[in-house]
Amino acid sequence: MKTTLSVIKADIGSIGGHVRPSDQLKKTVESYVHEHGKELLLDAYVSSTGDDIAILMSHRNGVDNPKIHELAWDAFMAGTAIAKKQGLYGAGQDLLKDAFAGNVRGMGPASCEFEFEERPNEPFVFFAADKTDPGAYNLPLYLAFADPMYCPGLLLSPAIAKGYRFTIMDVSYTEGDRVIELSAPDQLYDIACLLRDNERFVVESVHSRATGEIAAVVSTSRLHNIAGKYTGKDDPVALVRVQGSFPATGEILSPYRLAHYVAGTMRGSHVGPMMPVKLNSSVSFFDGPPVVSCAGFCVHDGKFTEAVDLFDHPFWDWVRNNAAQKAAEIRMQGFSGPAMLPYAELEYGGIVEKMRELDKHFVVREAARKGNGRKKKAA
Ligand code: F6R
Ligand code: MG
Ligand code: MG
Image (cartoon, protein in one colour):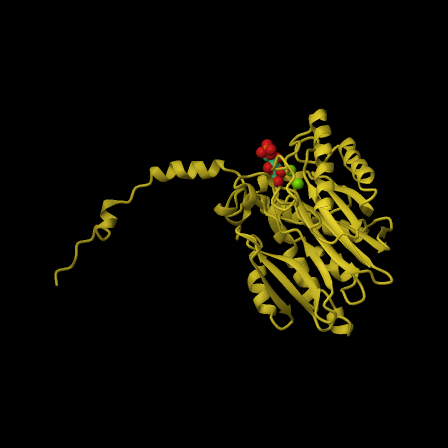
């Protein structure tokens, strides 16, 4: 019998700005899910990362199941009522529609799901990031699934030596899901060509080439593509199966030691290093830096073990220090060049209006129009 894991997450309000949800808010969402999901779910785990609450659920209903999505939506609605009552900032922020319409996709919350036949032991990890967008996972997934410098299993383990198939989505296409499938190692350079552009091309899923099994899924929604205006960054979640025919847990984690620069942080409009943090962490400096947490589990007959906090280890303190240094370095140049996102990615409308106004006052010099004011030489 197949097990489905679904993560649905949303920012429905937080304390002290876009920092972290209140305990009461989290508890409300958690109790709602446990109470109303009794018949539907095998298990559930509710956590927060920055200002986002994520609901991880196991069940037998497959992906895109309307009842599962509705349960999460209703839990966030119940949470929003508490967020409003407590006067939390941005209460209900990510619930962009008034009524639930069958699937949370396109309605504000981010989601990722996969269905598989459980192995006798089924370890997996769950990532949640805040103050960034789904492309933030491009580099870590590429390095973990396609680069033996980070994943020595690609050289050492016959179970994974055949490599992986990446499904990559063009997230700027809003008429439907525009995707391409490319296999590593054969099409490594093609994969890299796309994944360099984190804001347009996003890894949606990864499959084992040896067994065809699903290895990883990422939430690909981009809020500013949905709402057409700034509503907060997309704060993506991801699920990755580990060990056996998949990379080891440590191989999946290894790229996060880079604290690579991603889009997000202050006003969703800058570039900052992605800092691996402990579960239920908040954000701080410059409304950031972008953070990612990682919980490790085993699931058996749909039941979760307790979560292991995979970034709660002395090694990651060193990475966090490096990330803080990288954050401070890029911040020194303020709005200039690569420190702030390009025009199309700015999440606030203010500068767009400013540019429109300034545009009216630009002049094209007459002299330039007539050939830089230089007289044509006589023939
Ligand atoms: C970034 C983020 C924050 C806010 C900033 C201003 O994703 O959530 O950086 O953009 O705190 O918030 P508002 O516009 O709500 O006052
Ligand atoms: Mg927010
Ligand atoms: Mg957030």
